[in-house]
Image 1: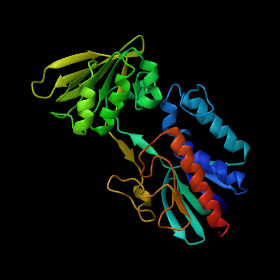
Image 2: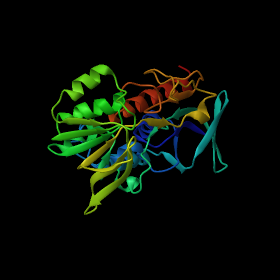
Image 3: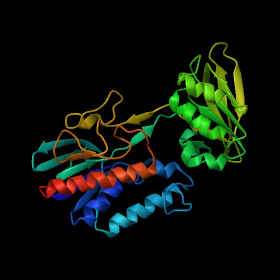
Image 4: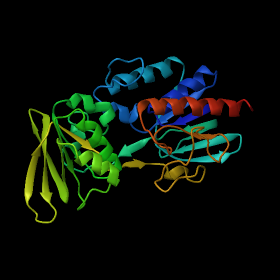
Length: 304
């Protein structure tokens, strides 16, 4: 029996474990893949307070070492559901094990929707990025492409246009779908081009680095190649919260419908990080959620 079970080993989950441990509670972190979550895709992080510059892996490793030094227990398993037995929560896994805790923090994060192109996974962090705030400075003075045409893609492109020599938006639909005001601001910039009705067909590299993207015109079938130093993919995020829908409300997009208090409709169950409904998804907001959820869990265990 653990006091707090954390589902997910990203920044939010590891921060939740840290705060639980520092409050004298026992904590188990269950992670199905690699510790660190999406931040491990960032080759360099320079917007995390107190850290001038570090790779995402370095930050994740530091968080992991910190919770281990505090006495966290770790399991590499896939959680399939949680059973609420009141004072005891049972966390079930694909591996057939069952873990009992007094409170649970769900910090399952999100997955970036990928393009599905050959070699894409190998280029994440090596030419393919998902966050202009995080990685835009690395492409200052260079040409980049943005895959997508919704609000997120246009916001990324606006940020990139302030740093990069050229920004090319590649949209699969016949028109951009982001807000008219965003389109007006973005397309008024002389270093921005938008190409619609495209289907990305491949990535090409030179000396092991991304050098451009191949695409075809959806209307004519004509093949094209667009050179670029970086590709920012902004075609959506995928939360994986379905297994917990019986305990916590989800919004129309599948995110936990929870506010800044990180509470759910089930006492003793909390959510933290990118998996919950929020306006900003950054490393700093993830760790803030982790602290908030863990402290709420501790108060719940203490009967406060």
